[in-house]
Length: 385
Ligand SMILES: Nc1ncnc2c1ncn2[C@@H]1O[C@H](COP(=O)(O)OP(=O)(O)OP(=O)(O)O)[C@@H](O)[C@H]1O
Ligand SMILES: [Mg+2]
Image 1: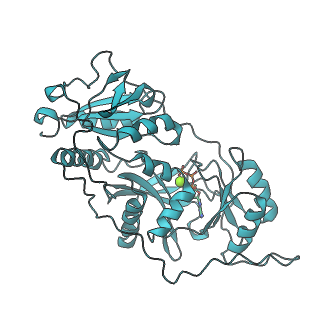
Image 2: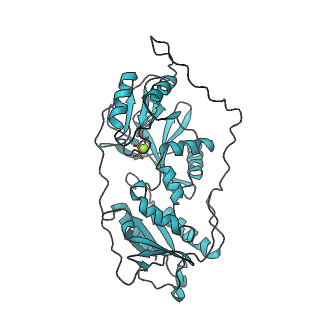
Image 3: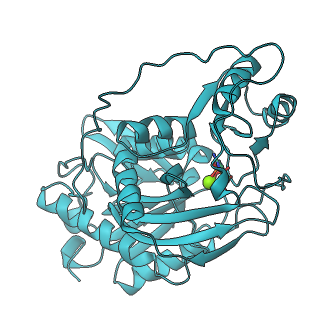
């Protein structure tokens, strides 16, 4: 293996959240070791950055940490960790930039970006209050989907069949903040979602996820995943989604709508659960190896599929606010009627895991850097997007 310092394996930093590493991380760590790399699994709580006239220097336990590549599992539950990554990501090969992760955690920002790149998404409105929810729900036609802009595991996603239910459910999921999203319901995909993994701009694998009977949501307690084959059109849409999202390592939720695939959201570190039919470690490790090699060569990191500019929105009709309804009956109904009921499941706890503590003194995952130099900041890199 000719990847890291001295032609040996890469010193790979795998950043996790609070608590022990989960099974996915242990599996990835084992895969990295099998390839001859030197993985070091560290919680972001252990990391700091020292900035001086040589630039930002990654530290663990207060001591400089020399690494050749970073893979991480962080999202908005690890904002200080993302600050650390943001400080050093221009100088170290990594998967998933801070900016791409932050956007992906925001469902509405993701929709805006995807729409600009010509990726089909359901009509969605960002609503500061009930007045706007009512207006856009009428425009889309009941039933509509209501969700928190940054919810997960379906726990803050609800279906409203009429205005009273809309306002009641808005109140019940509003706990963490007033603005909510109201979205056109893709009725023909009720209870069924395709979770699709794309790495380095290339489709890797997909599973069909189905929820509990009677629930329009495909995720949550009791959901079932099975491998599924995507059509060429769906593969093209998810690869475009990854380019638009700027995510090296992504899973996307794809619904099979009547008019073709629509993308519901992106996630920045896919859970491996349900993907037992494929070894997700291979494309992930291939990509970080390519990125680290490109950085050493100073050539930048080409994604497998070249980035594209946003699709020009020629011919897009100017936005016209929906006409307020007549006082009697609700006026707009352009969406097929609902096919499923809904029961709100409790949020599922994330799997727990084992933090590997950074050893005091030796912080370079066991391998001294060549010439005692940290590779951080050594070479310039071309952004992948
Ligand atoms: N507009 C929609 N039309 C049909 N079904 C929807 C729609 N929005 C959400 N759903 C269903 O609800 C599920 C959960 O919604 P979504 O993926 O937006 O949020 P989340 O599950 O909270 O996020 P995450 O998947 O990151 O945990 C989807 O997988 C899908 O089955
Ligand atoms: Mg989802």
